[in-house]
Image 1 (cartoon, rainbow, N blue to C red):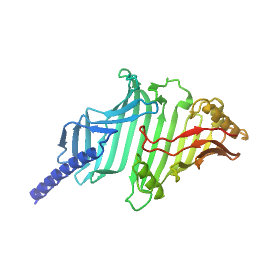
Image 2 (cartoon, rainbow, N blue to C red; image 1 turned 120 degrees about the horizontal axis):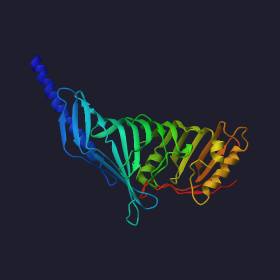
Image 3 (cartoon, helix red, strand yellow; image 1 turned 180 degrees about the vertical axis):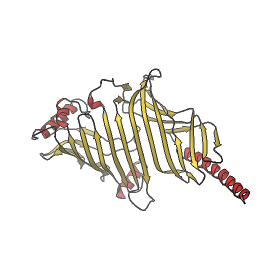
Image 4 (tube, one colour; image 1 turned 90 degrees about the vertical axis):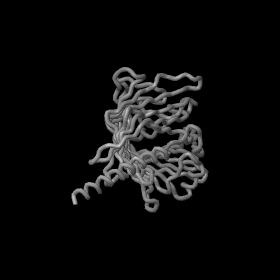
Length: 363
């Protein structure tokens, strides 16, 4: 009897190992596209008689996009090997030791390339539930991610820990997807210019914590198609932000919000937040502001105006940002001020969804 059970278990393990490898290969194949290229070397099965294990040689995930200035950026995650583990009784639940190294490279229009940025993680783990080769719920964690220009030297830590989960509905119940995230101790890095901030960067360049929950309602769309996003809008599609929180050394903000599309594909958005420490940050001009050619200074004037009636400008301030009918408004308990115009979103733009926004301060 024991021999029969042992033989049955061995057959189960071999079948499950084959299914695990097939699911992994199908998941990789289904995610290759013009922007994302996935490659790997030899795959070996091991772990018998315990947990299933695939040893994947030289895994690489390269994502390429066009930036606003026309330059081409490529972020590549890679490693010498990656382990994929699963239980023989649940071969559709994968635990991946994600590649712990990454490289950000930029090529500008004249063909030159700034010095790349190397990123390294101490821990990179992702758990994925698969169904017919498609990823469903996802849970992951990154710890102690550091970066440096070039390849030599000791990386400056950018992130102490990031944990995230993604849950997907069954196509009937809502929301159709929900993501939760929690990141600790983020230090300043400007990936757009490819320059690391110095260790003595201003306090506002550091975020002690950012966390929240994002829920998507309506059938999950393809976000690179205008037609698909219009269909999502017509099916009452929207995005909700809950329990948002940002903490920095001198500023704390909690926020909730919604995002949808109007009939002209313009964003219908509202963000309500309560901010502590805003007064001193505004006066010192240390908030990362949007806009160019004096637009940031104009927004400073708006914020100072909204704070002028506060007994304590560093105490709790209730702020509301809203876009409707192509107009953007910023307000508080003292009133609302129109700050700009927003146009239809082009989801098929070369460098990803493009939102035309013009800052027009009007008192």
